[in-house]
Image 1 (cartoon, one colour):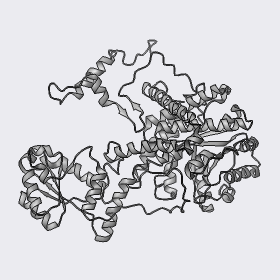
Image 2 (tube, helix red, strand yellow):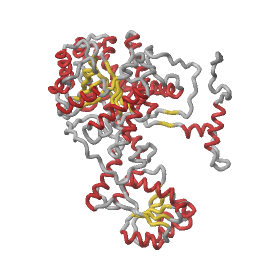
Image 3 (tube, helix red, strand yellow):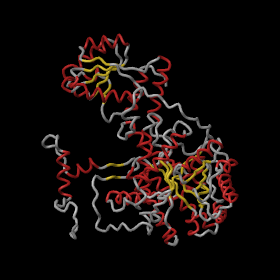
Image 4 (tube, one colour):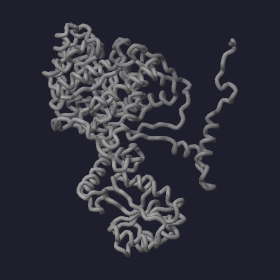
Length: 621
């Protein structure tokens, strides 16, 4: 024991930004030829990431001289709307949407008995009927669990069913949850005009249930349709402003309106951005409250984070468990008040008891074993996360101003502004996914060859056809390619195939053989190989196997010696398409364009290549 202060890393010199710059350039310029070295500005640009919506992530953040991070539960609530509660750091709210009353009730009770603390019912034609809400909740004690409903088709009926359940329980004063009134969320999906006239009525009804909130600002439909983080944040704030404005016209004060609004937001696999977005929403909403002269203690936004359905995959669904874990952890660190983790088999259909258990336990492990809820805003003071929070706040606020200038969120949605903004983000994302600059593990990167689809699930009932925003998943285009190959195999008994001719020795072709195999497996295409063969042997194998596509794989050195001869032989044998794993320039030949048709390289458009290859193999669309 000693009275002296312990100075961590005190014996080491304090590095400067110049030191960091110097070490970065050492790495970046290690293999560059003399005279082609990058300077620090070029190096920083190489290491800077720009998201699909324009959000910039820098490689290095330093503490601003004027940075004041504040404290949790204090204005502007960036660090949290309330102090940490060790007994319930956040509400673990499971989603239930199985039309079978018995199945849903059993699942709800199982969740609550095994660590869940909240229940979320979706009331729609393809989910739970409004008349079955009370039966589905049989045995659930209002107040002991947070209970919420949501609906696209009939929000009034869903909310009334929950209100009746609360009243019949005799615990209306203790009931916690949300009635799910969100006309703009419904309009976004259905494409119908938003009707805000009923908001004030539900705010009045909710006074009988003082711990429940009448209104939800749900931005998950925008997330599911492809909106970026900036847009989601902006739509949340713009929708909240629209609701407060409509309530004000009906005589409801801004303070009362703030008390009745819950924000439902998506949580993605981009952990740091999700953390920053949740923090930024509280800051921006507090600013709205400040302008509207809402009492400071009422300005904190309450948020329900839901793991994004857009990032879930059908193929290799077990990776979804990792995606959900990242999203759930980000939600907890960001300070979400409720968290819902969608089961890993969500894409297939209604969840099984096993998948519900996994999604529930992800949160229990984060809360009980990792103690993520023990400290409020552990991200506070991180220069990177504070910087991302600042940038998200500024860029989202600019979009809010654009929406307000257009007449508000109702007008922006009806006038196509929202659709146009999301389409722009989707176009950029599709380009990045196709070139694999944006990776989906198990789908467009490192796919599992000959994977079997899940069979243990219950199919969802047919959903109504809505005319609004269409949900889409990032992985769908790649799953479509695999489906073509699966259908081909069901008919022929084997996967579509291309011949891979590996030139030289293993040390020459090994790396590109592996890379190209993984590219082909993304589309479900097999690649039988012929190794270390002559040009004539390769051509003979192609003819005997009736391969319309042959890929050459090797190193630049071997390509310069053998590629053109092999390609000439293949073309002479009638092979329609000859591809090279790498670049044509590696052959060093002026004739290369005559004999080699396609290049396979990192950064290529994999979707176009695989689509074209399946077409050439005669695989039906």
